[in-house]
Length: 238
Image (cartoon, rainbow, N blue to C red):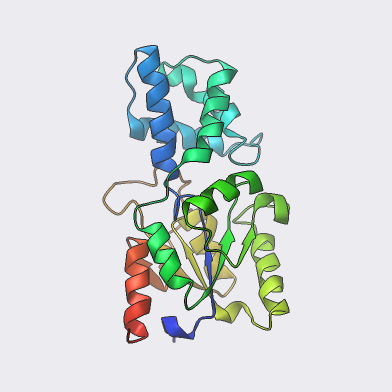
């Protein structure tokens, strides 16, 4: 039987794509470069090319890898293939916006749960993302901290060890994420209760996120963070 929302002590969060609109940030920066170059690009095509280039054997940590990715996709989009533009795309991460509902929902959830960030982004980027969200996290784990990236189970086990030191267990955690590939599937395999935030519910495909080998039906399913916050509030009788 699935635990009710008030029974959890922690919520762990994928950040990029769940709380921070990285697809919007990528498309906005690429569109600015395209406008300056006098060309037109299709945002969804750009995301598809990004996805194909991002998940390669020579990939670097995110978002530093955006320099390499830009150089890999620029010609296909008709954009100037100069490293300076790749650096510009990487640095745009500092100004990527939170989804409109993220900060308010996180502030509300933080009143009743300990919130933990679990991101494949580097620590420097998470600092900007956390600021955009109102710094709601009790703890945070990045690719720099863990030495690995989701969906590697080792990333999750470091979080389990952390909550264990606080006297809790993975059974006390609700894992919240938009990525089926990086989060929902592996969290199920590890015996966690999970919550899928389907950010692209009104759009086809997986956008900038790699498609999973198979779909995992989540324990909880919302199309926004506002939906999760409302459900938690209702479950508490507030």
